[in-house]
Image (cartoon, rainbow, N blue to C red; front, side, top):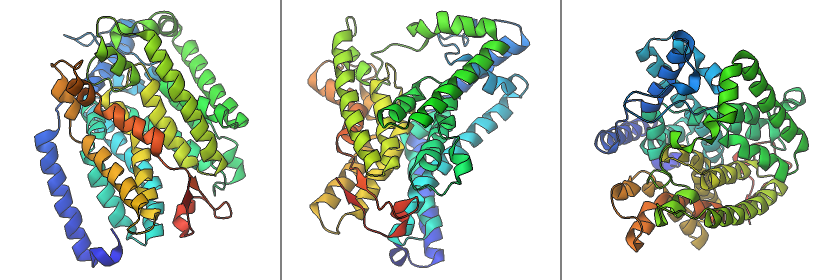
Length: 414
């Protein structure tokens, strides 16, 4: 909101306070309580492995089919849970989720607020309130998930170390790729960003990312050889550990295909969809990097990772946040009253409202094969596809140091 529209500091504080109360009320009514389910899986696995002497991937959360599914390096990162009291583990999990998501929000929202002449703390506070209502974010916090930690590692890498025109000193930029590599070693799905670096021909960063992931994996193998052997030869390939592919929370292309025919989902149809999606993504990412728009490359890759992964639970869709924010950025940069501005801001609004609505859960126990079920149960997939298809690539002024949108210079999209 522009400073002139928000009025004085007191009025802005009041607006943020009212918005925070409204969001808190919305969360009290709409937010699902998961009781830190995934955090309990991690916590129980660490105790079983490090304190009870059991095998890491043999542990299952009581009364469930869920066990530890991440690579052994992730277990090393989470090993302090073996000595933490349960409630302190919750505090650490929530704190990490809040801090990491706030960092990513600041990196993406602050350039917009400076370009638009907004009061920076006010724009950030409004963004925090809106993101708190975002279903994937609240699911990440309620499950005790690691999504925002991975997002901040990748975003810091791509926005500050890889990006052309970054103000980071050259001696630090030689570490470009380390964040992507660490995220990949913790959870395999961020490995799509290594592919992104290869597609956009940042060879050194790609090698660094792959090397970092490899070294981290080897360290884990040296520390925990039995767990590493079991993960890479058995646990990784056991799809029963992650849940049913046709479950409505699986908002990936694989989930769409599985819900059409849960008993006999077509692997060929899924692979064709994945191939077409990856070709389009690679073309768009090449254009983004050629234009100097690393943020859009980050956003598009986050979106495509959700689409092509066999399993993308709703909480994984925190990777859509950069794309939604950049959609708003592009809309605000367009001429006032223009059709382009209305279309981009309208898409951002509709996408956001869908992603706070819990709409897909209407079909949790219902038939998703009929037309209404097919459209509704895959609603978040349609948002992801829309972002991949229509998120504009910005032509940034390369003479302006990163982040270019903050400079007030014109941004054109193509």
